[in-house]
Amino acid sequence: MPELPEVETIKRGLSDKIVGQKITDIEILWHKSFIGKKEDVIGADVADIVRRAKVIQIKLSNNLNLLFHLKMTGQIIHEHKVKNDGEIIDFAGGHPSHDWHAKLPNSNTRIIFTFDDGSKLFFNDMRKFGWCKVLTNEEINAIYKKDYGLEPLDENFTVEYLLEKAKRIPNRNIKQFLMDQTIAAGMGNIYTDETLFDAKISPLRKIKDIKISEWKNLISSMQKVLTLGIKYGGTTDSDYVNIDGKKGGMQDYLKVYHRHNQFCPNSCGGKITQIRIGGRGTHWCPNCQK
Ligand SMILES: [Zn+2]
Image 1 (cartoon, helix red, strand yellow):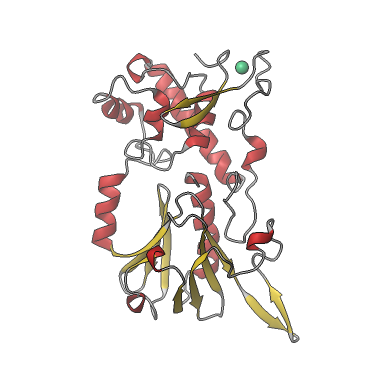
Image 2 (image 1 turned 180 degrees about the horizontal axis):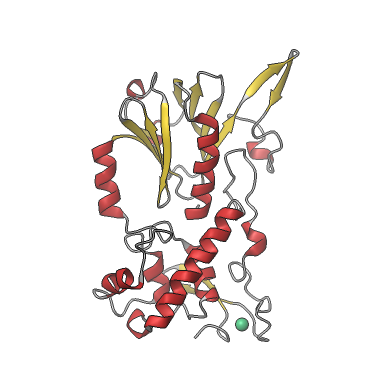
């Protein structure tokens, strides 16, 4: 599932392409992917785009919003074809990395948005768990309040904040604690494993046993790996591509995620191990992480 850096990358790319554009048509190819009335949205301009946790909120000029969750396999790809001396040039997605999104729309396309500059936005979702919902500002704010804690890159994401969250669940392990969206919004499996490796903390540690100095390290490690992830345009594991249909580059900088059986990059002599915690594959170095 795309995590904070991947969704942030899509949001930034999308902002460059469609802010200021009018939505002139919406074609729904799989009705369960679009929740709302398309008539409420057609004719509105894209006013702004924001990210919260792993969702993308497209703010419209009529005070409605399109809220996207990509879930496991969702993709948002922008394509702009313009005529140049009679020849059609495909600006975005021009050199896609996989055949199955080389041509748009394809068998995974669920929704097609058309804008007044002629460009199109394709919502592809192979497994159909993702969605696009038409929501008012009040409805969105209620969802954010109920489902999400602070963003790890927020200045209020402090040791005090985490200790307050930890009070109710002292026996929770740190891996599951950091992946809880009501605690660290936008974190997922990849960046949690990388954070724990960077902070040298075992994913199995109970949170009641974590010292103040370790909480501080956790926060700075989390901010470090997320910032790096954003810098390299996210991690392409399998289904994630950016707004132009291209891969991210963060996979080349991951130290433990999906690196099991490889030697630890800290040269401790140990190997990266994979275990399951809360049903999720967890990658770590038992030598370095205590
Ligand atoms: Zn190690």
